[in-house]
Amino acid sequence: MTEKLFYEHPVITSCEAEVVSCEERNGSYEVVLSRTVIFPEGGGQPADRGTIGGVPVTDAHERGGEVFHICTAPVPVGARVTVTLDTERRLDHSARHTGEHMLSGLAYKLFGAHNVGFHMAEDYATIDLDVFLDNEALSRLEEEANRAVRRDLPVTEVHTDHEGLASYTIRKKADIVSDDIRIVFIGGGEIDSCTCCGTHCAKTGEVGYIRIADAQKYKSGVRIWFSCGAMAVREAAAITRSMTNIARSFSTSREELPAAIRKAQDELGQTKRLLKERTRALCGLIAAGSADEAAVLLRPELSAADVKLLAESLVSANARVALVFGGSEGGACYCAMRREGETMQMNELIKSVNALTGGKGGGSPAFAQGRTDKPVTEELAAIMRDYIKKAM
Image (cartoon, rainbow, N blue to C red; front, side, top):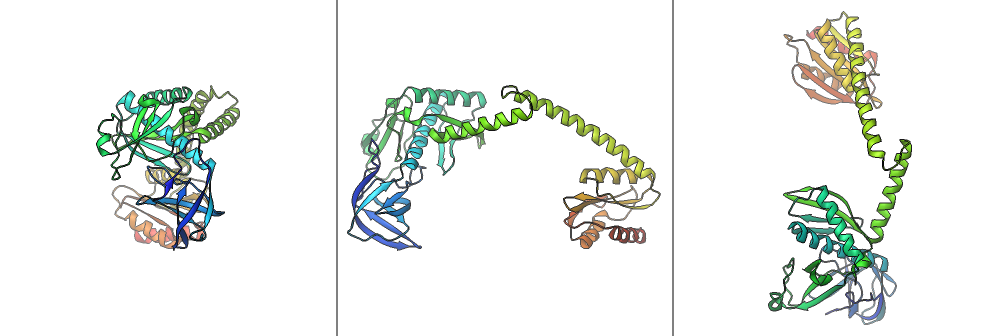
């Protein structure tokens, strides 16, 4: 069984070990050592990285008490090697895992919410709670977690067996087969107490800063995205810089930015409504100048929404059937509409347009629309005009 040094504090960053076995598997090498400072994946936490005798370790996992290090090259069996830990990665994982305990423990104590899921990826971490927390509750949770960080409370652990576990009052008991059960306490249980196999900080102050980045409703509860330590500081600094740049573009301060954005949204909404009214009036003028019962118009300056407005205007004026082509990112958008009482099928008409343009679209007998990546020419419009006249 591998001697596990990754739970020690202060953090042991290297050790000497004997290579017990080395087997090739899927292009990599699984190396078992007599002892290791490299934590294997477990408890929602990714594995540490590092080197064994200078050979990079890209992953690690545990089976039957042995830690299998995934290496990029073979290591001689029986050799004495130096095992070196990627310290920055370990500190990041320990801070986030300790932060997860603090958020989960406080969510339970403050709101009766149970942690029903935890995932730590390379660049984010999430907690799933079975109780929905609104923005006010999340702000309080973040505030209380950072208050616990500032108190620099001890993070301790005890080892017990299944019989001894019953004597502890803890937030969460994982399903553990082994009779060596590890319980982690934050602040002596004041903040959290939970069975866990991950690595943690020695004190809450080492977490540095806990930041709830986002949250959304998940099942009957909430999923929280959070970060801790240096990662949280980098994210907060990046957001501050972005907010400052956006505020400057609005000629305002970060504090006044929400009001400035709301004002811009209101002005944009008013502009869109005015533009729609003017486009509708323009479409009416265009339609009034068209005497064709089979109205086929090519107007590349019009958007998909405007194309529909023009088709409606044409049908309301003189057209029995209207087919309008507009512009769309180098290609074209189009729609077909018929007057009430006409029998020509617009969905069938659009199939013909799709065939000629290589586009896609569909609709109902009364209205259909489509889009193509190819530009539409006057020649194609003339072909469709003749086709409609013959079909009417």
